[in-house]
Length: 428
Image (cartoon, rainbow, N blue to C red; front, top):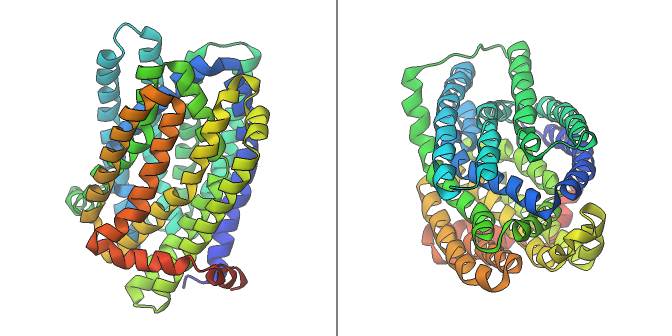
């Protein structure tokens, strides 16, 4: 049974390891950003955005549905997990080819950018093994992937320090993600084989079944990726690498505590899905509580980061990145609305309304592209920040009142905005 004690213990492991990882990331990331400078830092994050575009295709939407698959068919865990891994590995190879084709055309005449993007895309093969985390989430055993990810990041941090000490060029930094995800993927596979009582198996017959549920998340995730990364690509193409570097510094600063949100949401996902399956009366209440905690955490972060933005940028990135300060003061307000979308997606999965996802995210993507196209030529990185904030508010809050099938979710969301519920969630 999924008790509060198990949920808290599961979240605790994620948070503790992520706190350590984030502190390392702050220090090493700060040093790398200063060493690379805004221009090269912008190229690295342009490559990251290009790879992010094909990531939803590589993942096939499976990361959003596997927990429910395990919940419904626990006797076939090994077969479900094995089949999903093979599906993602095959699609990862195809996606690397897609990245190569795109940058060869879009960045013709920029050999450095093309090579960096290709090197960065190798990480897709290893990211396929991220799916194993879904099994650990389902078992409320997140301590294993959390410790593995911490150890992987320690190793990667040493690698980055080596690059800095030996003054390596930007190409060496492009393979950092491959090293990181490679260590994580292999380690999780070894741990799974040791603690699971079901061996990984592949089933052709199961491919269609898994894809029939996950397919709705592919286009939906692509739309999310579009309005999360189109700003980086448009900034590079319209305003240059340096402006993209300033914007990336602001985003990185705003996301510095995102691990807390992820830990809470990932720990509550199996609880909410189990409540729905069992017809538990706490189903709506748990979603409202989750909305409440996430929203007030986001608003608290936004206030703090707005006040101390100058200090944060100076500490993390240095005086060279001070143009990022006003960008951060705008961008940080989108955090609360962004994670509202993550909670809503749990409700959509539980209610079997996956077919709504692509419509929601298409609306957000179209809005984001239009606003970016108007504001980036006028305001550069600040225009991209305003576009991101407007998109998150519209997609994850306002749209829920406009689209009828989503109004029930927004009723639960509004209920979660009651401050008394926050006190209740903390006390219980």
